[in-house]
Image (cartoon, rainbow over all chains, first blue to last red; front, side, top):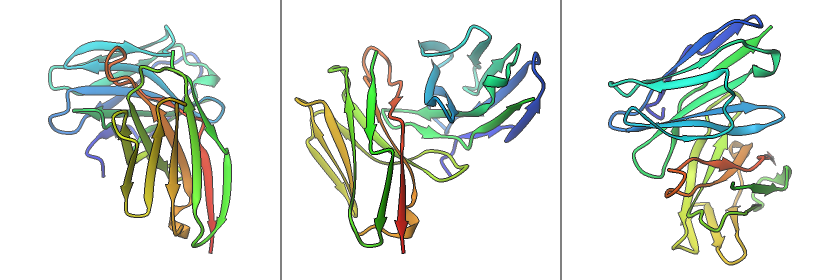
Length: 110
Length: 114
């Protein structure tokens, strides 16, 4: 157990819908990262927050957004969902270089 | 941006043999290189990492080597066991400008046959 938690574990929804994924980092970690894992794209960095502020952005679509709250938990919002958004979404947290991953949310868009 | 290439994509070995996975990176500013092991449907787990000021690091049966000049790093697993079967990912990070975002290789499916 890495100490990073994510909810929900599974999410099944329809195209055009909006969902919110939640992540709680390890105690004391200020950085939260979001990654998308799909079969054809591998593990792709989406976005990073540090102590409530956006720090780095990767291949994140405009339909996706994220935020980190004062208690350091983070949410990833995915809207206007398409079939191609089906993937495993991981968050990771860190205090230094080492990033520890949560169990992931498997999103299926039908 | 950073680009990480990983080879081979699949690796099959007999129990007790050694396994080697190689990665190259493109950004000379990268200074942190972790390796993750991911079992089917599970989270990536950090198994070993190396920083750019070190050439080699070992932890029991696993070791990582780094050649900064050539921009490549490798994972070595000795005395492989069936429980080593998993997907292994290398990654590179520049903890300066990019604040630690990881760029991953494509992954290597390692199968250890009993």
